[in-house]
Image (tube, rainbow, N blue to C red):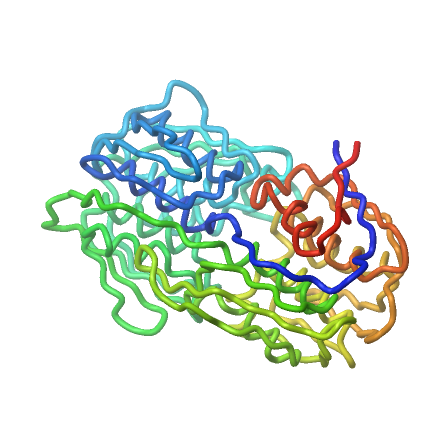
Amino acid sequence: MTAFLIEPAPRALSGRVTVPGDKSIGHRALLLSALCDGEVEVTGLSGGQDNRRTRTAMEAMGARAEDLGAGRVRVRGVGVDGLTRPEGDIDCGNSGTTMRLLCGLLAGQRFDSRLFGDESLTRRPMRRVAEPLRAMGAVIEGSTRGDRAGEIYPPLVVHGAGGALAGLDIELAVASAQVKSAILLAGLYASGPVRVREPGPSRDHTERMLGHMGAPIEITGAGEVVLDATGWDRRLTARALAVPGDPSSAAFLLAAALECGADRVEVTGVCVNPTRTGFLDVVAELGGRIERAGEGEVGGEPVADLVVTAPRGGAALRGAAIGGATVVRAIDELPILSVLAARADGTTEIRDAAELRVKESDRVATTCAMLRAFGVEVEERPDGLSVRGQPGARLRAAHIDSAGDHRIAMSGVVAALAADGPSRIEDVGNVATSYPGFAGAINALVGAEVVSVVP
């Protein structure tokens, strides 16, 4: 088990960096490429372990992937109806996205599959993705526990329904890109249309990519998408796919610049899909300033360079109320936003974020524990937390257990840059699932080795 040792930042940050490709888009690019007739070159992949799990799963079912270097992979697809039964169980590692999207895809196959993961993934609930697929005729079995009646957990067994999946018209109780995506993937094999409505916006990468590749999909209104495969020629067009930079990874670097001050920090080529810009919106609510430059489009996704300039000692931030649809668009960034809230003037309230409880860790509890270790006054609530900021004051050096959660580990590193002495964060191996070069990027921006990996 490895740890991060972090020294306080001795100066304001400066530099121009790139971040790994967005892993949410990377999952979908690898999966849909495998369903194409022909070869697809995917560029910009993160190199993280989560995307590798999706790639390995699709290779186990007959697709072929060739590494071309520097985040480039050439995928030879087998067609929508060409997947074959894997020889063994599919290991999803720590990737909930891999498991949930595969549930939808495998529901329509003519073979059965078993999906498993690491200890963290085994604790994550799967009923919310299984139920709508069951309503389409899929049979999905999982492990049960006594803590939640009717809930199921990995490992999962998906009994392929072949051509027996029915269409579906469903309104999700909670906006979820993973559940929506699983339903749409199952819809490729359904005998009728699938219509998904959500109470608020969630990530729309699956819809964009399916449309980009010629699937019969239509976004009919706010929060509604329809896929109707009846009469479709069952072919996805093999088109090159470019994965833009991950906004969730960029958030840690931008937050460090806002916290410590920045002569100029520029993170290039970041996805600014409106469903992913919740972090930017919350920073603006906190009084921070992140500018966009070089706006364009990559693979059907809007991108921009994100720029922070801030005085030594950090930007002047103020407390804010964060909730509703903004939380859906910033769900992965709430731990690092809580670190910024700890440096703001006043109290920041985060609500409507019960989804954090079922991530790689219970992120409400682990975020609160992290902040308390740094001497921050924080109150844990069922659906969020309340953070009382301490602007201008150094945080207390801390020793933290990240509970194997990469976002808690990276948020802790950013907080430690503003501490009054060296800090240590345990169990950081899972940072490789999303941002393998994170420590190096922080060191490059600080201009010194302030983050080191230690036993």
